[in-house]
Image (cartoon, rainbow, N blue to C red):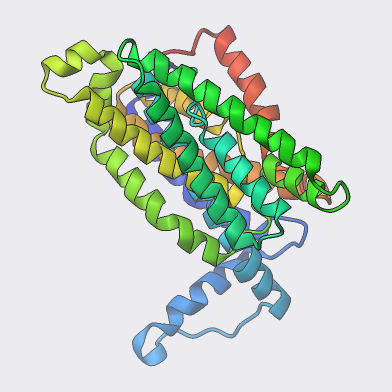
Length: 344
């Protein structure tokens, strides 16, 4: 049953701030919600002229460090990663007119994974690992697109096949990197990074990915009504004056920047960009003018829940890629059984 767009959107808008706040006080180190609220409000109170509002701090130095140095950047990163992967997945599904498409269809995740694995193998610092992942992710999609331009027929099919080729090539390079890596130091680090985690995210990482994320997501939101036309068919879009080739290039570029940004700070996290767009269609229908904003919010909520579970279920943090697969695969199977996988 599809809820009316207004009801579905309002529910998601209300859920995001609740999950954002809850994610700050739950975890292995418990922090009182009241303390979290005061910690978040304290910097804002200091900005008020004349200090008209004042309260005595009731939190400890340890709580302040946990909230500001560990959880807040992690929660912000979870919002960015979840929202970005979901928007990119929905945009690709509209571009390829296929509800089974995910953001890594053109090889960006495999390319980014190899870039990170190579940087870890060479003992580069975390910033260089992230930069290498981002650059190789973009490079992989660039190679995919250039390879697809060799053929002039069935461009969408050739693009998908090119993506499969490039993804397989970079996956082989990842395996080679793991094979030659030190099994006691480098190999565990590579393996853990590839499974996805937000445990090492800091404010500097967020600052690095915010510009490409905001620019690419903003462009997709601005052209989302055109994605409706692409989803109907290329011939119909051309009839209405849409340059389908140029539009495809814009969508691929924006989705690649978003996905590469997410992967470079969080590792390879699957199923988010595949499952969340279907949740969005169940809430607001297939209209991309409503679907993309809802996917952005739903993806952020979904990743916050996954990250909270990763921190709470065991003492040793569970990689995000494992949880998204464990939860996403059965849910997608449920959608298949209900025949809910599609455009309506």
